[in-house]
Amino acid sequence: TDKALDRDCTTLSRHVLQQLQSFSGEAQDLSALMNRIALAGKLVARRMSNAGLMEGVLGFTGEVNVQGESVKKLDVYANDVFISVFKQSGLVCRLASEEMENPYYIRENCPIGRYTLLYDPIDGSSNTDTNLSLGSIFSIRQQEGNDSDGKATDLLTNGHKQIAAGYILYGPSTMLIYTIGKGVHSFTLDPSLGEFILTEENIKIPDHGSVYSVNEGNFWQWDESIREYIRYVHSTEGYTARYSGAMVSDIHRILVQGGVFLYPGTLQKPEGKLRLLYESAPLAFVIEQAGGRATTGLVDILDVVPKKLHQRTPLIIGSKQDVAKVESFIQNGH
Ligand code: AHM
Ligand code: MG
Image 1 (cartoon, rainbow, N blue to C red):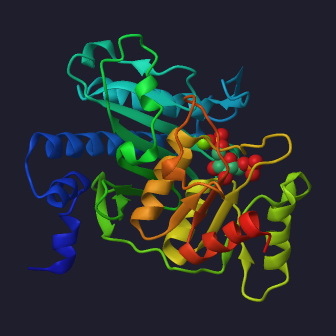
Image 2: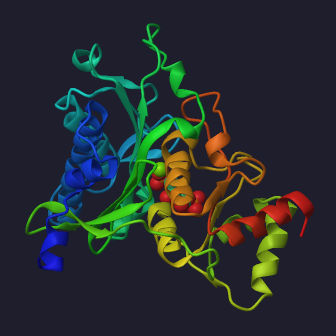
């Protein structure tokens, strides 16, 4: 049959089932969960696509979130989209996000809902009001134990416990990238069909790339080892800088073309900015599945066990060789 037509028929939910090669309960659950994440992505993308034409969509709400960051209207909207979408799925009992101090319980799903969704509804919030790339990040974990005290302490485990993770990139087109531990696959939203259609299967990140992606405005706040690394790329041929303000888009570029993204600790914030459970760990799962690496500089991101839900960690992620180079500066000073 026609190859292009076959590809057009490979929707996201179909792909998840194919990957698991079964119609088992878990396969059906994962397929349904991914389908719901896709719906959330479509709702957020729709809102963003005409945000500038409507009143009350852009700008700040005037509130400050648990992270001490000013909240944007779009942050709130996207956070609520995921809650609404999963209220109706029956599969998810808890949602934990950057925008909520404590997990949100969907009580009616709790006796049956076996999964927890961790997410960052809008990655790169500073880009919202200027029509630049944004993302959403997601991670799915199986609920362990009954969480009878309602503190969700079972979420404080390492990143190997993720059963699915990925991101949605809202760029010139909307893309969804996911892994369930069987490689990394990308889908592009076809607005005329309203479906995410398979774009590339088993994406492999190059072992080395020319891009380094970091906020160099923090140079004087970094540890000397990171400054040395930056001096090294400045004085070596073949490096190029790219930094968009939304790590989903920076890391997506690196997934496709290679390179390294860094958000090191600073003097003011020794753990850096990025949160482990719903930012760094899901992206680490994706990049490792594509053959790359993610580390704090000392420990693999997927091995880090957080002490609290909103824990931050330094993040160095990307091509194997480029991550190793940064590591060698942190660990050996060169
Ligand atoms: P956010 O989820 O509040 O938008 O924060 C995460 C974002 C990343 O996407 C981006 O790489 C980083 O924060 C930019 O921070 P900075 O302005 O400090 O460089
Ligand atoms: Mg974020």
